[in-house]
Length: 275
Image (cartoon, rainbow, N blue to C red; front, top):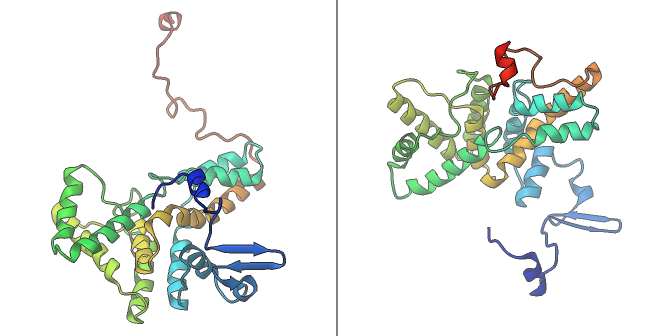
């Protein structure tokens, strides 16, 4: 991706906005070279998302597998910052779409960004393996030496995430049909085994790791991962914000007024110290 000045590009003969995605004219909508009426009713949500993003088409089995990733990431309860933020916003009198945007805007590198990191790792490792069969082990050592967390592994709550085993099962069926190669899923497993050997304990893949591998299998660019996760988690955000709105709670903060939960650690005035 090259960085360029929009004005300079325009001065050199380019259009101000250039897109291969859509051409909208009176009474006509063309998306990636297809009339919209030919797409409506003939492609699924996941197929349409992939088509708009890449310009390519998914088979029915590939689309079902991709859609399973979207479903897997849809909700993880109010413990998740994105869900909690949307619910809090819904109690503060903002418009419903603003509550949804509040939740979506919580998604970033730390909360919701692990899929992109795992995809970058898998894509890079796949390229490295062509000339270095020890790439996985070497990368594990580099992460550990740098004190960094390997993206796609471990979970603060689950040690046997039900989403992961289900996605593995669905992936295997598509591998068996020959519609994905299974190469990235194999690399993910190599990382799991390598980390387990180094740590001398069973290391687990999390939902971000398996979701990353599946998206690599169908060729989704890593840079799009946070946006795709936003669409996935957006379903849960809408449901939770609506539920909170219907409950009628007003001004719910991040935690109740409990001294054990919120503690002042700043300077204490002299008069207060004497009391």
